[in-house]
Image 1 (tube, rainbow, N blue to C red):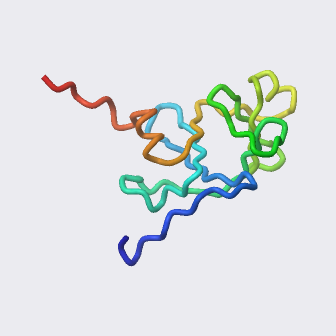
Image 2 (image 1 turned 60 degrees about the horizontal axis):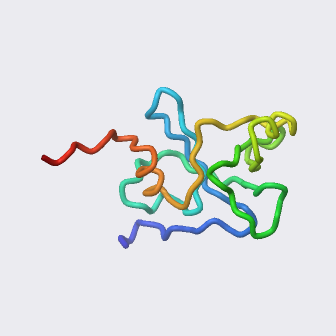
Length: 123
């Protein structure tokens, strides 16, 4: 690690995540990561904010599934919650977050969304 780099910080058990908005697509993608991406190689330097992501029903030890819908609390824009469906987000009065990615780190996001485009096929 270089002297000016910060060590990556892991999300806390209290639901803290790292929010990044990727505006390289026509529709921005909301990204919630477990690991602070600012120290990752290849991270393009987007703004990063710490936010809270509560699992479904605030269950201890339960994670967020890829099938879960994510809602943002309109009264507290730094607080997100996982719901079982888009309808549940609306019933709770939260703002549905789509498109979105919830995952461990920036590298996993890049593999899932390929913001730089598909890799050329080898012949």
